Amino acid sequence: MKDEYFDSGEFFDELAALISYPTTSCEPGAGLAVSAYVQDQIGPVLDEIGCIWRMVPNQSHESAPFLLGHRFEGAALPTVLVYGHADVVEGQSDQWSEGLGPWTLTAKGDRWYGRGAADNKGQHLINLAALRLLIRTHGHLGFNLKVLFESGEEVGSPGLAEFAALHKDELRADVFIGSDGPRLDADTPTLFLGARGGVNLELEADLRAGQRHSGNWGGLLRNAATTIAGAVGTLVNGHGVITCEALLPPELPASVRSALANVKIDRKNGGASVDENWSDTSLSPAERVYGWNTLEVLALSAGNPEQPMNAIPGKAKAVLQLRYVVGTDVDNLQNLLQQHLADHGYPMVTVRLGTAFPASRTDPDHPWAQWGAASLRRAVGDRLAVLPNIGGSLPNYIFTDILGMPTLWVPHSYPGCNQHAPDEHILESNAREGLGMALALFSDLGTAKGRPPVSPVPAALLHS
Image (cartoon, rainbow, N blue to C red; front, side, top):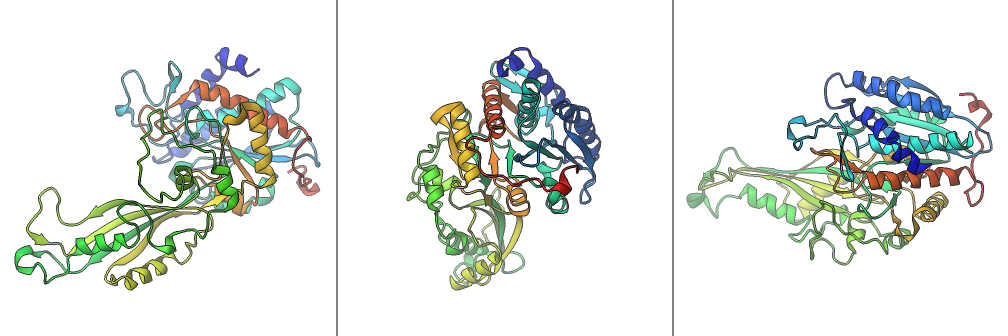
């Protein structure tokens, strides 16, 4: 069933059709391409699965509409919410390698190139194809299906939180299954259960207008650049270790440590190698990126590095980013950091918070997380890596915190896929294996054996 779908060319042809739609959410008028994509491509697949679906306007961002769909099979059966995002980043057409382009799917060996091949069109096609193959083979799923597509994920999912809260009953499910982001590496099937949060921090020392001669005034005037460097050093040292307690989680939970015990970070297939003696070496590399917080300096600004003058800068600025896990207190972060800097002799440095997104995860010991891992291991064996959360960001909190459901993410891409860059691609071998994993997960969901207890669908929602 799986191999026939790939060998016949059906998967390639379907993905090629999806890639041809320039659904770039960062550009004006994106709503037209997105609406056409959803109605002309996703809708017909949902029709084959037997879903009732509709487009719903986004009240917060008119160019990023939603799709809601459902298939009902029985009030006592489990209900799964499947998610995908229709939008992509800009095409960057002039930067692709010769013979490649963003809106045409091109196969070169194991690599299939095209914008959205990895993020997220190829990934959500795999899940929809698995559901359709089950319908073609058995005529039923054995569970209730709900489908949510958004079209603004690449611009921060505007309106998704409000939409989820407004349609909470219609989106209600026992478990969430989605595919986005990369595997641990190309050779390692992966299940992850959430995403780290992130918040940008701006540190600024605005001490005086203009600059002063470094010879005449050196030793007499505070240097804004030196001050910012010192302030940053009270937060994270020169070896990447966070030195400010307010920026750390309270603990590494036992369930997270256990899940990561056998996870090895091996940056292959275009990724960078891991630096030794960097960050908190009391933690394993997997614990550092999937179970702990990191603080990175993204930019520093003072004077003119290209043409430096013999002058003391009066202003300096640093932009940092905290990637943080569940349990980190970020509600009062600005005040905590301002007090921290004052306590360390830097009251003249101002702290401002920039772009932020929350952390969220399903505990690895949750019954649905245990069920998902067991199901996938039956399909791929002990190669499966279970990550409490990925190091990057996804709107996972929408599903865990607003909709209150456990989340299972099964990525079908890999770290070297050039996501968000020219020459984006998906590996056919990963896609083929991913379809097998999706089939296994959905097949097991339709079987009562070993499945966690489910919540019956309320009678009022049977015909929603």
